[in-house]
Amino acid sequence: MKQSLLAIAILALLFLLPGCSPSVQQQEDDNTNYEILSAERLVKRLEANRRKIRNFRGNGDMEIVTPNFDNGASFRVSVSRPDSLLLSIYGPFKIELVHSLVAKKDFIFYDVINNTAYKGNVDDDVLAEMFKINLTFSELNDAFIGAVDLSEQLYKQPDSYQVNETEYILSYKNPDTKVTTTYNVSIKDLMVTSYTTKDAQGNLRIVAEYSDFKVVDGSVYPHQITIRYLSDAQQISIKYDKLEVNKPNIIVDFKLPSGVDVISW
Image 1: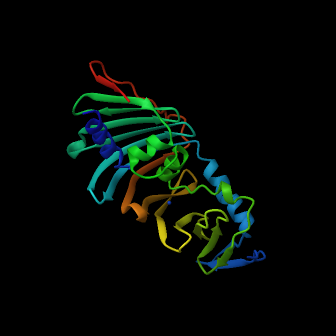
Image 2: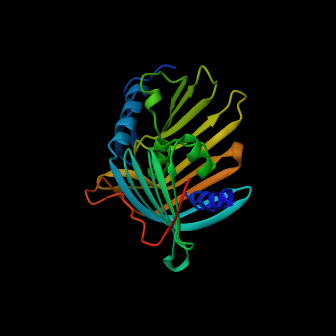
Image 3: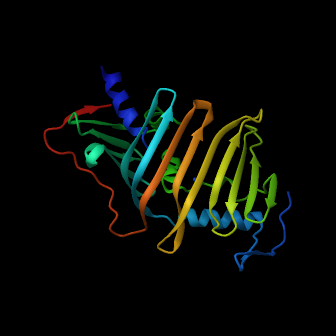
């Protein structure tokens, strides 16, 4: 019985559901000159931009496709980095279905229709079970805002670095796992437009795409995010209608109403 109840929580949560360095030169695009950065400077710039995000709030639509599940819903998400995320799922006519507060140490999942809440401790295994994908809490936050964590690449030279008319292309191969990650970065916006990971045999494992870039409070963010986990035949798509970033009024909190049946997990 307990497993079936958790399955309901998991399905709802699944709805959540982005060589040698060349010398500095100039690239002309739309009559505007953009500085071409070395690989080291580019990664530092991208990572600095990611770390500037203190909080954000957005609403829109999402869809998740797995071998056993294919559905979409409207949602609202609020995130205070680095330690809390509140996700609300809505049905037709904005009917509340789920409110889920996930922190680094614990979570609350409120099934509105059945007036039942689940509470428990959070770790990577719990997140993987809930979302059916291998995401840490930090990766979950990055997935929502369309950011890509490049902290591990900060002091490494890429195994391959190319620059074409519109984008940088960087590839890094992990010497231990032999997994190769390739990032495509827009020269104009300095935003990651896609990345892929391949295993030691060259098989694609993850394909992430970020698009519909818009300026929000002076910075550019993707409003459409699609991440495919090919090994698990899963795909998550997020499309924002509205996005707010680094606002003082973004507070991530949720209080259970009275009379809720609470199940500890």
